[in-house]
Amino acid sequence: MTDAAIRYIDKNKENQFFMFLSFLEPHHQNHTDNYPAPNIYRDKFVGSWTPPDLESLDGTAPQHLPGYYGMVKRLDDALGRIMDTLESLHLDKNTIVLFTSDHGNHFKTRNGEYKRSPHDSSIRVPTAFYGSIFHGGGTIDKLVSLVDLPPTLLDACGIAVPKEMEGNSIVPLVQRKEKEWPEDIFVQISESQIGRAIRTDRWKYAVYAKDKDGTEAPSSDTYEELYLYDLHADPYELTNLVGINAYRSIADQLKDRMLKYIENIEGEYPVIHNAPPRESGQRRATKQEIFEDHWKE
Image (cartoon, rainbow, N blue to C red; front, side, top):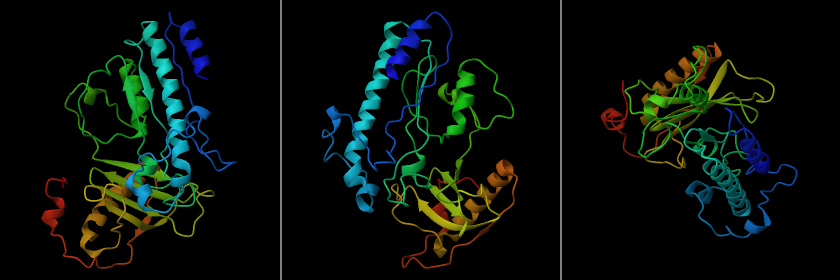
């Protein structure tokens, strides 16, 4: 595929073009339950760094992570060849390259498969723009969703973004212009469950439709609270705070945000049932401690 992409770029170097490449790597090979790296990288990453959540939770990372890393390295090689081609043809400055993925991988630490959970290991993906206005360095501390990528590409190419298109262009953020920006991300989960989640800079709140099949229905009229994580204190989502009385006010506010998203995007008005209440066994955090500098009411 990389060879075909290079030939296409060379053939169209004098013309405007749009090219979409979808590599299989580093996807799980369902029929063999494996992540087969190329032979050159098959043993290269054995014993490599393991993220704390994969290290702490039972899953398939000890078996599969080295092969996964090898597949990622192969994909990195392919991207490097494409970038070298653009540079050699003097197209690198006026060509926009977007690298992203549709999901991450939790290696069966969160459910019986490798994705379709609200955890960052599933939903936080590598995304990078390069070329045209996307150059230089710096940090922009904002939450960006996959739905923001299509309007960003249109905007960066000088094409008007349709009003009905979901998402927001990040071009003003890249250009350091003042722009009102969402403080949360809405997540929809299917197949493994009918699930919904909200992620802010600090909090992760997730619900699911109990006893309903995620392969048979797109949504539900009732949901149950499933997860609540404090991402500042627990970035690898190892301590579920859902139902703890001290965090009830946090969950309620996130619930309200989620219901607004569901109404605006799905046109539905479900009921979200609270998780059974429980005590944490530790000192109750005050509202000021929880909200100060982290929340805009």
